[in-house]
Image 1 (cartoon, each protein chain N blue to C red):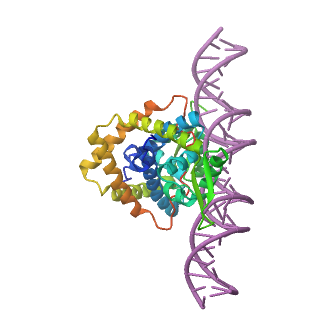
Image 2 (cartoon, chains in turn green, orange, yellow, purple; image 1 turned 60 degrees about the vertical axis):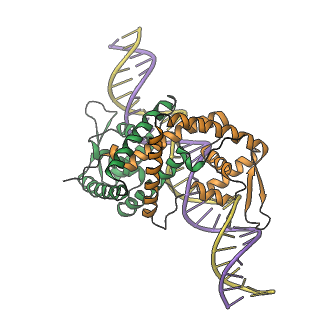
Image 3 (cartoon, each protein chain N blue to C red; image 1 turned 90 degrees about the vertical axis):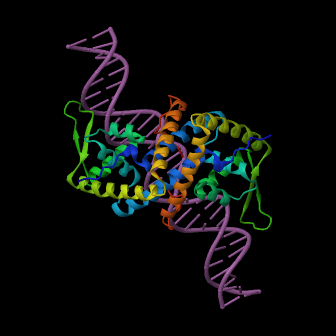
Length: 158
Length: 158
DNA sequence: AATATAACGTTTCATTTGAAACGATAAAAC
DNA sequence: GTTTTATCGTTTCAAATGAAACGTTATATT
């Protein structure tokens, strides 16, 4: 008897679809309004958390691979949105930070991203939001144990 | 004052990371054990739900674009895992179904996928699982309203 | 019926991707 | 202090990607 795999009740599948829809809806906005690609937005948002960061810091925080980060950073620097300096004590590292224009743009994009998230989450009560975070954290911890140590998160996924 | 966007409390970001980890953990298994790429596995799993299907049916059900589906189907047919016939009443459509070997392989892969999902979900109680489905469904319905009609889900995402 | 329009799946082609090689710098081993 | 090993970021190159063009078949319009 074949196993009964119901795709629309299969967590990896549903998670992929939901994540894709959310990313797409949001990406459409900041691409059209701010001219940022997804990798660029991710670099940007990461620097919004903490500055300065090296490229490698961004790789670790975003699960993008280092070539992709390198390219996104180069585009942002070329666009005058980031400043790139050498780290004074370790010449291998970059010290990436917002330029004045970058900081302004970040403020705009972040404001809009938060507003958008608010609209999305408005279908959930406070209790449900708390549940959502708790569930996602449990799953994330569990799946981290499942991932073979040899595999990098930044590996290709489809 | 800049908006306070905490990335690890920003749903699109966390959803992306979780989905990526889950897909990666699972993909690693069926790539190594069964030689299936992610697009191939998705075609396979879709046919596991219902047979026969046209390529276009698979496009709609998986949110992959039609070129990707075309390629995955061709590889699976070449590997002797799928049968491809012309639809009797509409020559434009394919009638895709498992070959005998494909059906056997699907049974194996599906069994393993379900077992793996079971391990993942074992960190949640029955109540929590029910919550998870309910929350994901609410979010998915909400985000569907947000996506501009002009944008296709199968568009590039990163 | 003849013509125009639309739908399906493949192919083409320019772009994106990421694994691996690379040069440059720093840390570790000896 | 010299040599080896490791780390950081860029570049290279082959493979994957998807938008658009295409050939084929079906449907709509006239």
